[in-house]
Image (cartoon, rainbow over all chains, first blue to last red; front, side, top):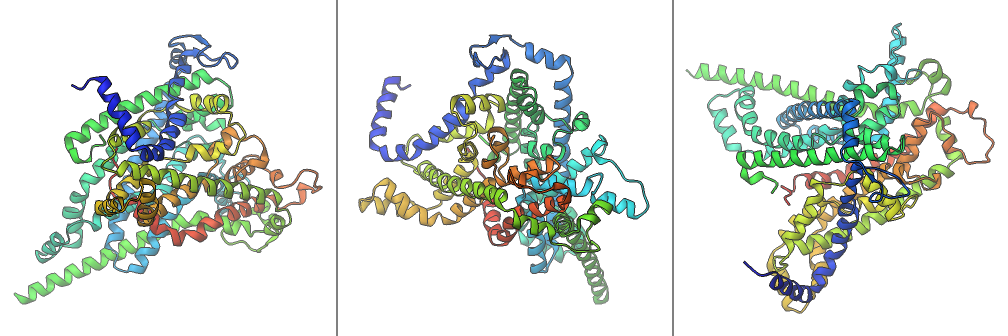
Length: 311
Length: 302
């Protein structure tokens, strides 16, 4: 056990000896202090009745009242349920589509086709969700939307998408998969190209059909990667895709019951209702449970595959 | 016996062909689905306003028209201004971010720097826990006074733990001998970073630079939170305001006398989106390889 003052002396000596290195990392440390660490104690605003003129730490302490209120009016349960279900759908369906497409692209021989299709599928990842909001308007607007224009040209009734609460969960999941497939697919494709070619040659010599090679070689070999990526995804299961939801739904409150997630709720409590303390209570709840999930996932990963654990 | 092997081979090859055909078709279909919204947006922007109002947006309009683009080129001031804001934050943010994060990566990869693990964890911890939107907002506005400042769009996205660790991992692969021989020749820590590590780290600089540019180009979130005056709207927030306000007033300068009733507003909306997305689509084929290499560079650990 080294005594504290020895630590301090060592530190001071290092500080002088490596002063250039310390200077070079100083802006980074300062950045994370200012933009990440200082706001952390501000989470205390969840436990007060926030009054702008008194500031966070001068406002009246109310304990868990903000949380109680959110539990009693059912908001907390509703947005938690929505966030969890959406993220599960994104994670499970997303990974299935990514794995299938990665395997299919790896089966394709034509390099030109392979390259072009990969680029095209990755393109949506580069597009801002604001543009995705435009796409949705372009497709689903009641007056001029592409789908309604198709429906009328077939002599069918127009559909009012923007007041149909049931349909948006499918549209949201669809756009999420549309934008995220390229990214995940490339990760899986890199794993597949990294697999041992000799196993495949041996299987071919033994007369395995291409379907059998996928079923008995590629899929089992991909399994660890899939499990790992899904596990890490579960760590962020309470984090919502704010930009996607906000640009598709915006302030259309008719659709909130099915499309309100934690992040959109916190945002509205900030800009719409100026209800800082309740919004912060939800945000605090999200941060704490988010941390618990990541730690739990990391503990599981550590058991299954120690090399892949985060810390 | 040789006949049975031949038959088996034929069956395999037929199966193989079936599989290949299925793969080609499904991958092609998915690629078409990925491109479809872009195509629809472009054709919609070239549509005649009467046709949109009467029959809605179409993939194959009866009549093509460039009136939406004509309008944009006749009233470019607001859109150009939004472009300027976006280009400004992209250039400043990317240069500053690259400089600071590459220095951080260099320091953290130096084996003789004792506190590298502690500082790495200090950076990593911010991905595990955060104060949340509301405390951050109160601090940005009341503490830092960044309301309505362009820096509110530049600073929050300047550095990310992920990019710093990517940089560090890349620089770790640069052989120690290079550093040692330079140090023996009397080069200082900063000079070694600038003259030896930076040129070698070009691929990872390109990847992280691409991420930064893309993030700033697509920036709208911080603008929505902090920016009040329309003169400071970046491109994407400008677009978002236009679609959510359901009219194109934003495009028209104050004092200009234009009757909005005669304008092809529905095609103008799509034309504006095309003009804003165009640069990304144009540079995309040239930069995507850096993106892919960044994705596959390896595990990023704290």
